[in-house]
Image (tube, rainbow, N blue to C red; front, side, top):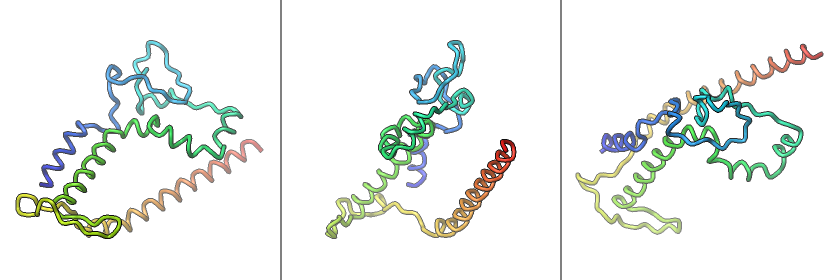
Length: 176
């Protein structure tokens, strides 16, 4: 069953990869709030990927910074989530993972029963047997990997802060 689910995920994603730039003929022109410097004959025109990043540079004015620092920027950012470049690059993977997770949850509710928010336990509609087993993952791999993943994230955050602080000091030396 688990191999069938993995094949289903691979088929749903269509072999998509976040680092592969789609062909310009398949992608519509993006609506981004950056200043794009594409010429009409540029082959990257209309493509949103890593290759076009050097052509997308945001130029901020004072009014843009005031708008960026406003107290309602959270709602604005949340409403513009689907036009984000990162979301556009990862949309297929996110949709495929969400679809598989939703399927597994509903399947396990049908086969294994569930407890609703008021605490009432409902019996399974389809009793589990050899043909319809419950899906599940062991917790041991997640338990063993999580401390090292946490340390990795902390070290990356500390090293990026160190680089930023060093660049700030050098910038201060240059302008003073």
